Amino acid sequence: MIDIQRVQGGAQGRSAGSSCNGFAWAVATSDDDVADIHTQTVNALADIDRILVALGTDKTRLVNATVYITRMQDKAEMDRAWCAWIGDDPAHWPQRACVETGLAGDNLVEIVVIAT
Image (cartoon, rainbow, N blue to C red):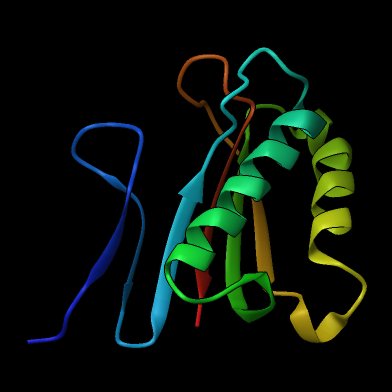
């Protein structure tokens, strides 16, 4: 049987991250749900960093990212935070999608990533 490593999440019944067989998955929102989307994205990405490190990897190993936002009109501000975080090296850019959807509470962004 293959071992699964998990990073405890903030809600019952789910983890913030897990890794198995060379892959790591992480999900994050912002702790500050009254902030604008740029700030919420910065906060969520900082949490993604923390989770990935706990799983033995980092953002340079991302292969996929899905960003969920509540309003597509806010995509440019989310992208500004994303681009500052991911850096200028295309070798570290994952495939990424952005999806408009409803989110819990006052969250404006939720980010899900897969890394090796």
